Length: 209
Image (cartoon, rainbow, N blue to C red; front, side, top):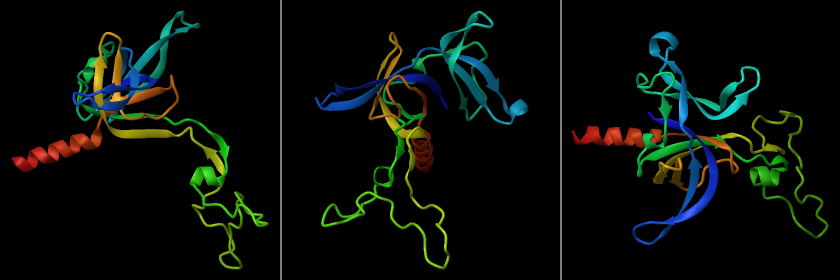
């Protein structure tokens, strides 16, 4: 399992070999430093802690990392503390899972948050986009768990799976993946190997054997 840290730059389009345009998201992935290594013997699992994007630490007067995340591994980590992981960890055509935080939309009503149908728009209707009745009569006399209600929308951890890497620019530390990834422009994202694609490939190879 391979993973890198990056920042969402924005979306654009590229043209494939057949001349068809493909919508892609550009992810900037500056070299990520290995800050710590987790092992099965010491920690009970295998992982590497990566840090990217330097920032000045006033107390120690030396740069620290602005974005730090831990990447789980299937086996013992090949890297050591101080090693650097770059975009060349992936190759064009690989499938990846991208994790980030979706755009925050504040407090929203049920129509926008849960796609309620809403009430009538005219003829004296007093319902429109309001909540309406949410409980029952004597029994059970309470609001059932899981009832969709107005509330905070967005700003949640979201993972988009099986995105294909269309282009890698090693000099500029850029990756172009097919489709959209969560978050606003300049938001941090984590790019990992596609878990489901990997499982399918192993199962398929095993069936052939």
